[in-house]
Length: 392
Ligand code: SF4
Image (cartoon, rainbow, N blue to C red; front, side):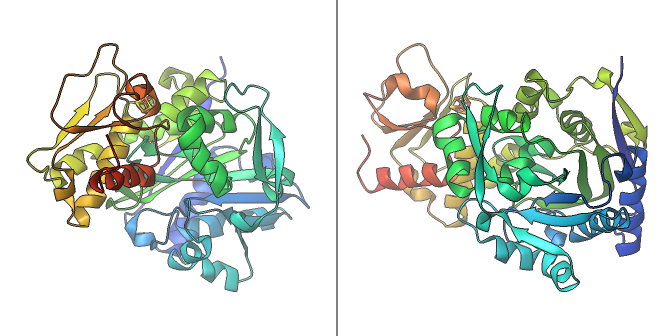
């Protein structure tokens, strides 16, 4: 059996630009080199994670020096590198480009493109069950190759956001939102992975992030670059390094079920450093949030057994925002319920807000917010509506 190859390269936890260049080149070489899929004249999309305005030191966005090194290698092969990203829903990508210093690359003559301003085209999804077609930027569809450059970090809704999840960033805001509110984000991201297929995935683990990711977590200097052709296999190995069960990564697991790659560690060959020599247990977003949150008296938070991490972490992330804003008091007298239940909900004197599509069977009796999982912004809006007296 041919195993998926994943390279782990470890360097200094505080590398300079030349050391980062060397790390990336070593990782790419261990996977077979860019020359195995880039030829003269090719346009190559380099897709970082620029979720929101954040400096490289925060560990939330892909280090611009990694993308520079990849762009340089594409140029050395006679190709045209295009660094392209669309930040999170509602966020101006140009603000992220400046904060994460990609403007330095732009002023140095590299193409850095905001995908939110790009023309989109419809792409059929033959294996889709929730998506029959998907709107993607034309520049991505027409590219000869894609290099996916995600960040190694924990995430409030999908445990860790790595290779498979990172490609959601190419989509227009309207579709990103629908992934949560209408289609179900785990399944949709997996179905996207069946039709938009990076030729190489290079995880930025130079300064990773744990805890309240994907934006507000704690930086973790790791000095790592992890690379491979199979995005699911790279996610699996990166998750193991972070002390996370790869099968708990819903997006990667569903991508594996659709044949995108392998999630089984026995089917992956690791080259470079060994997992056990570079691993470190990352604090999950949910663990960090429970440390941080001060639940007010008179508030019930009910996570039924079947509530998966998407809804759990989405609600906790929303409560974190209320905690930061000093508004936890508005939760008094509210019960929030996540996760499917077969039986009736226990009676309560509190107003009840059902969160997530799989609580829909009770929606005639209580306040209800759909989505799978719902977007945190929508959870916050639903709680605020309750506070204003609109909920049941
Ligand atoms: S709606 Fe249900 S399946 Fe979807 S994320 Fe929430 S708990 Fe999970």
